[in-house]
Length: 116
Length: 111
Image (cartoon, rainbow over all chains, first blue to last red; front, side, top):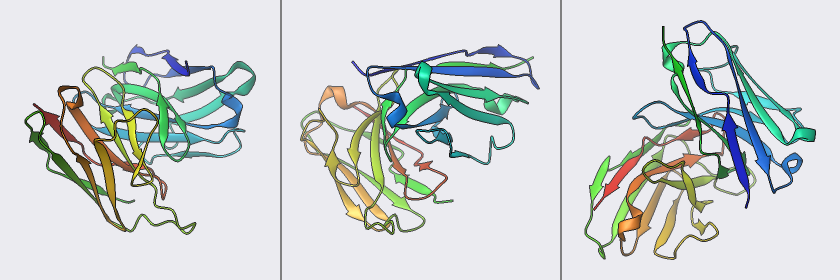
């Protein structure tokens, strides 16, 4: 079964950093673009980043631009999100998703809590 | 940025009855390639969102035919012909015609 599994979430202090990972299985990871989407507690969905299948093209929401960096390792079937200068507004469940113009496969998400 | 506005915010339905959700975009979602990149997702309680409808009206694999999508330009609708108990959750529309990708605020459907 096609699967995405996120990891790396946790509690971090304001101003701190965290690196999320997303492991893909079953499908040909290097053929697909990927994205990160987050959902603050009790709130809606917010797209935050995109990376092309080769990793040569990336894009970010304004809310994270300059603080977050998306990358991938196709040899390891893995997607990453480096998050720096975190604030309380970044508290959310972070999902990775396969992007085919739609988000057709989602992971279960990993919770990131930014609090002192 | 393209703003996606969903109505209503919430919907209480009776099993077996129809339901309809509206999604309006602040700009036309018709892409220069002649496709319209409008999608519908359902997020069931405690789960990640799941894709229901892609490109306005195409049902994703495994989605029951009681779900249908329609619309064009800036006005779109998701219809459930006969609501079932398993359809409860929050429905989101989303556009990928233009970056940044944007979601509607969601419509909560309960029984």
